[in-house]
Image 1 (cartoon, rainbow, N blue to C red):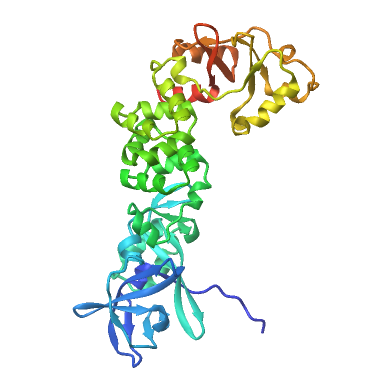
Image 2: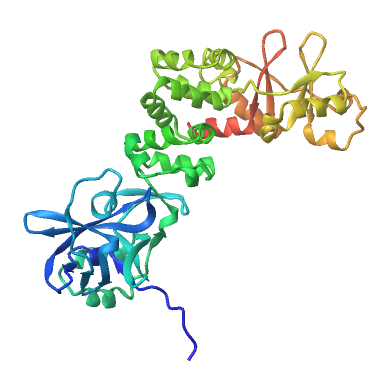
Length: 418
């Protein structure tokens, strides 16, 4: 008969809790009260079983266990020690059940209702490895019937209920204490890989302490991108909670207009504290934008753009793009200025790729230069984007010099916040 590769048997946390523990002679020594991972040693294997026996809890190491089943846990070693709290442990009942975690795969915040383990048989002994966390009705049913019905009966009755679970590798634990995050080896790589808008939605569903914990420990660039996507009140809450140096690092990674909008939501004193920690050039750009009147073109614009003399060629434009590589993702237009630095036209980026390298940019510029003064109202700017189907709109000062650029993204953000 051919050998089969059957999946390892499963055990739920609701079944593990209260399971009898027996010594080498089959005598009951207590019941399981909790179980713990030590992530720095092994991120999926249960390392300790905490057993209540009389007036004290005992700690059973994973390598002291012979067999695990629905009938109980049977030991092969009786040299047990009293349980002492260990900050390197992640306990299933105390730290995971009923707690909010981030489902990095489903991009949402969920509450853990149960935990599923696989029983692995290795070198003649059984051990538990965490497989997934359960968040659906099936897990709730197990919780409600825990201790009321035999485990096998519960398994039969839960059959018609669809499972709803998250693989352990997609779970990100939310832990506000920075020292405990370190001890539990909690990392944010899966969150940093998300789209900033998805991450922003997740963070907005967390409490203030949890929001700070996530942003505090993330890569600065990823934190800035996520913060840019959040609602103004959430931005303000996070920036208020961070120390000024960390807040400044994040603000510097944001575009100047987004940074100015975020700081404008804070009290003047707090905003100034963060500005003082910023590099002089970034501080100057952001400070100028904060000074513009709210709901005007000046307050909406971004000061990151590419402008060249109207006499420049396509070759010179391509060189300018290479020198401003960090802007390319959001860039679709190059602006032209005359000899007095006044706005003189705009060239769509796409035209550069079909024009000869020696072609003057002035010849590629469209007709009818549309621009707005810094004092123009937000409503009027929105109307112009709609009327002329614009992607970008230059903002000029009283002398016609370009102060900044408003993009379609800026208009969408303004409309969303109304």
